[in-house]
Image (cartoon, rainbow, N blue to C red; front, side):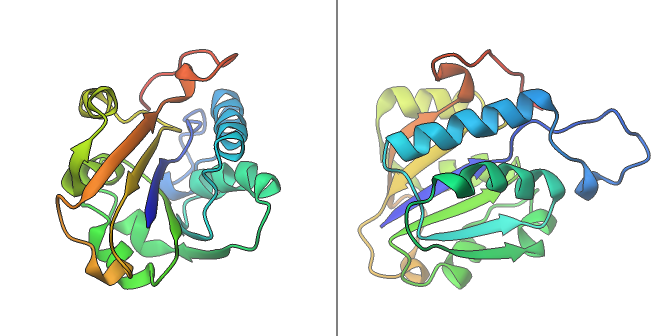
Amino acid sequence: MRLLLYRHAKSDWSNADLSDIDRSLNSRGKAAAAAMARYMKAEGLLPNQILCSTAQRTRETLSRLLPHLTHEAKIYLLSDIYNQSEDDYAGLIRKHGGRAHTLMVLGHNPASEETALELTGTADEAAKADLEEKFPTAALAVLDFDIADWSELRPGTGHLARFVKPRALNGHPPQDDN
């Protein structure tokens, strides 16, 4: 089974009156989300189930991916992903993942980074070093597991196959961590 941990793209901080959950993507975030969606399609990294935070910026990031899905996918908008953004997502994955072969969690940091690090047992060394450095906006961690159901998920049992940052994609400018 494969887990895609995808951090939302860069959000807009220009309107101080908006609550955190209501912040949308800025122009760089929209471009990064579109670039990552194209990459995911080209690399065959398309989920058949998506657990997405209810925050505006995660839903907008997801909207850039949806046109690239070539098959049916179940999508769940979960407020717990937003509410647990300071923790890790392992419990939510066990609870809501079911038997999805390729499960995506579209969420926030530090939970995306903490979850990837917690679940990684073996890794592509370059990917692990990159992940340990920073999990920037619109980055994607791809972890593979030898399990039959997400309820079997345990720390240190995944293989970090790759870690992709938007700035590494052709034609996309570097972006900072926010």
